[in-house]
Image (cartoon, rainbow, N blue to C red; front, side, top):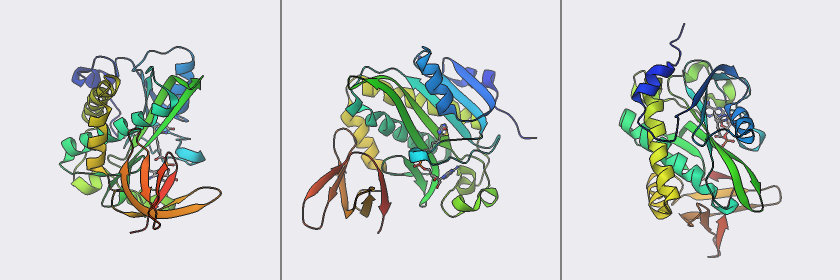
Length: 264
Ligand code: BT5
């Protein structure tokens, strides 16, 4: 039997003022993001965290799934109520990516890379993913949920075949078991720090850190959408976290959302 997360231990380690003051822990759930969106709709406080030992329907983007075995990794969703426009919401994913990268660096001494927009990689393997969902009206965000899945201790050899070739876990790379409660407490405090910096208007600082972790900038990439596929060199980000792509013709495109492939 694996050690389950100990909420009182986590609360003792937590030094935040908003994020994680309320934590709801589920042993099994379909998706922490689904639950957090429902809680957001019924008025849950900013900073409420939904945490699960396992997910049966963990969500990725665009209808994809997040493999979420029990007791080995972290699956959490944070409810936020920033007074921002829809166009600014991408920066919350950026702040979350920086927080995850900083937490990994502090907990393991390994510096991960971030593949735009939401993949956290070590040696090109995905160790964490972020899914931001929101409710909005009149171009403004009503509330927002940042979902984070991080592979801490799972053995990649026991993961489903579809992800065995692309996923990684911190334990595999650091060679030691990661204390899930300690990692979570550190992650929440890192996230609070960047969220408050974001709310204070210092967005450039977050974009600088994100750029520093970027595994995408400088690469040749392909962006596919339903209608087309474009290629070019990823050469920077705009202020909202959109990706600036230089096509071979010299034209710069701004990619606001989507999936990219690194092709060199
Ligand atoms: C993501 O989507 O990377 C966002 C994942 C967010 C998961 C968290 S867990 C807590 C919260 N509650 C939820 O229901 N979701 C969030 P995307 O970029 O679409 O990547 C999904 C793809 O990553 C899949 O199609 C697989 O190829 C791969 N994948 C699935 N599970 C993985 C895992 N555990 N580790 C690494 N890669 C995985």
